[in-house]
Length: 140
Image (cartoon, rainbow, N blue to C red; front, top):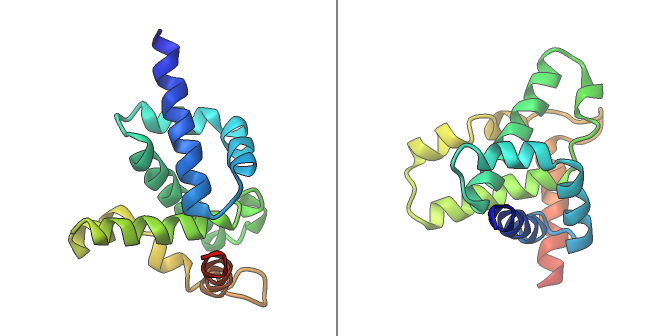
């Protein structure tokens, strides 16, 4: 019985990841399968599926920012671009829920820093995000 609740949370997380990241359910499931420990740790903080998704998205932004600060870009190779879109959609969802700017800035403190960084000598993370948003909007 106890494991059922965890399975349900992981299923909810997977569905939300697919929606917020604009990826297939299969790709979301593959990510969840590979990163269950990190996701379960987020649930261990008392977070529900949406809270865990937002928490992990900010962690990913922190990892990107830190890797650029220490100029160790190999550390961000395993962070999929869809996390940029997840973070953006998380911010939008929280704004729609009436969360204050101060709270948003606290919850997503690395977001504004990351989108200004150049990724690969060609694009900034902001430009990558715009491409992801265009793909999302073309589906609608």
